[in-house]
Structures are given as C-alpha cells and as structure tokens.
Image (tube, rainbow, N blue to C red; front, top):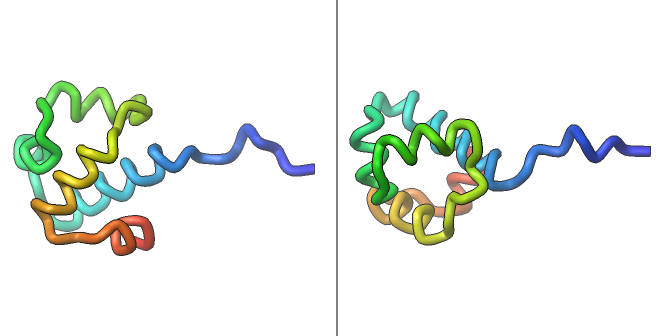
Length: 75
C-alpha cells in the first residue's frame, strides 16, 4: 500500500520549480516578487507554505517571464 504522507502537493512542486528557475537565472527576490505581483515578505512566506499560491500569481509570473505552464511543470 502506498504511503500518502510522502506525496508532495502540486502547489509546493510548482513553487520549488519557480525558486529553481530563480536560482538558475540569477533573479533576486525583489524581481521575482515583482513578476508574481506580490511583496517580498509574501514571497518568503510561500517558502514555508505555498498553499496560497494562486493561478493569478502563476499567470503573472508566466507573462513576465515568457514561460508556459508546460515548461514550468516539466522544468
């Protein structure tokens, strides 16, 4: 039987990929916050709980960076 406690939620996986993209592209927190249209404080809160990451924020990020959801999910 599979242990459900080890499954990583989708919002957490997407947030980790956004942070990975940030590191690879050498983008600072202020710029990333601007791409997502939120404050730096909220950006850092997402590191511990990305449950409030909305589709609107993802759309803002993708529009600002030119990425698609396909690229982001398969990054």
